[in-house]
Length: 143
Length: 470
Ligand code: B12
Image (cartoon, rainbow over all chains, first blue to last red; front, side, top):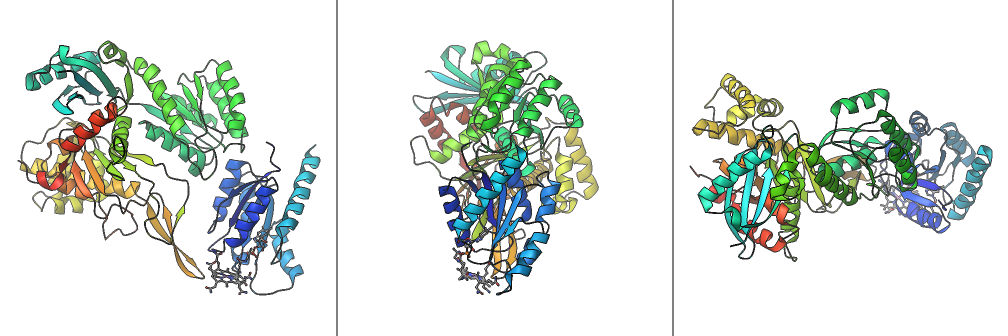
């Protein structure tokens, strides 16, 4: 496969904000990733199943409506249970209610097992750079 | 006149349908019990003798024949995939669409126990999938190795991750197994691709399975048995929906009530009919078949009563039989599988049982709506096909051909206010295959589509017109 990696992308929980992931998906595709977009209203189980079947390298969880602290915990554990515990997990959007200090928020999502959490307004460019770095680090670690 | 003969070696009856394709006429229909033990030609000869007696069709008039079969157990298959509701389900749907009986769908890596069970099930064919194209490949390869080591005799159709197909082919052919590689049933997560697998299954059925089942003695007369019976019905549904050269009947549903099973076939995208309904889950096949192995009006008559509840049967019969009488009668039907109703209450019981089978089968086939509560208010999710706007429902099977209350039975396919989440047809035209020729139309769909479609259209009866036949 010539792609830079397979990514499963979707908006988690009861969230219908689809503009962000639409933009993100097209930017990621344009830069050479194979993007499997699950759209909106995606449950944790759907993320996990899609990642297994497509042998995804990363799951990108978008959460806009402020329910991230309710919707996001447990995904890492489900991945572990399903045999893909090492998969890269990113979360972004407006992951918590209102404007909060970012450091503690980032800490909460790190504790949930997310490799990276993004504050509101994260640019696709930054996501692409991080993914490229994280995935090639993994390839090197395996070699 | 040159006659095209369509033959079905059914599990109970061998049916023959004679059609004059030039004049687009149905010349005659006859049937006789299927004779697997003594050789299927005997049953066919008897059916042909009846056809000649009733319609004057002689052997010499028959210029070509085409046949389907569900005798000797039908086409018994096992589907294998990775995630249960992704590739394992996609493989199951492909096998069903090919007219198979799916004995079981296995997911993830096959365990020792799975392999033992597979050997016990002794399927006629295996459909092996797993992984989207470029996706997960280890499980598919391991499962291929496991099948190779188990040395099962069944031909294997491989329709999984393209990135693994070479390796899988090498593993299976080195083990001397009969394998056919086709396109993935689920190339991408949001694209179901069942046609290549269906075509491969059909070709293996035609070239090898019928031979293994001893049905090939009929081939000198009928030529190759080209497909399993349920596939012929699905092909007929497809032809009627599309029309022979456009202008067909549009989206439709066919319900086929048998003694042991009830099949539902739907043709159409099943896309949401109302805005705001969000489709979820695996994409749906345009031509979809489901089989209810627990619903049939003979062998499974007791199961229908159990599933629907005895109260609905009692009230359906207008309280003319009590619960005990009904239970005794359905137990009798389960063993007397070729029982033809003789008096009024027997006809009524058949109608009630068939109606309940149709009701339950449609409830399971049609899409379901669930509600998810979001900060913006409720969102409606669609799981499966939305059949609300389907314009036509066709009833086929012995009970529709010979039964007395076809309208009542078929009406049960429609939307019910008591079950609003089930998106069944709301206001369809109800048509009955009174001459029992739908399978023949499917068989002729390839060779004489125009004649087949026109003959069928002429012989579908509006349910209200057959409502009180005695
Ligand atoms: C448009 C919009 C809507 C539209 C959505 C239309 C649609 N089809 O998407 C509508 C009107 C339907 C809507 C509804 C609601 N909304 Co609204 N909505 C917005 C708004 C104004 C813009 C969002 C947007 O599309 N931005 C543009 C895109 C390109 O940016 P983005 O989504 O941030 O995505 C970028 C990055 O964040 C990043 N990214 C996104 N996801 C991820 C994931 C990963 C892993 C990574 C790496 C990066 C990443 O990539 C994108 C590209 O740069 C925001 C306010 C805002 N300015 O953000 C509120 C906002 C998100 N909505 C909000 C709310 C509360 C709601 C409602 C609950 C309102 C209500 N009470 O009815 C509902 C919820 C509906 C639901 N079930 O989800 C709040 C959320 C509050 C919070 N988090 O604390 C916000 C922040 C407004 C606010 N300031 O209060 N909304």
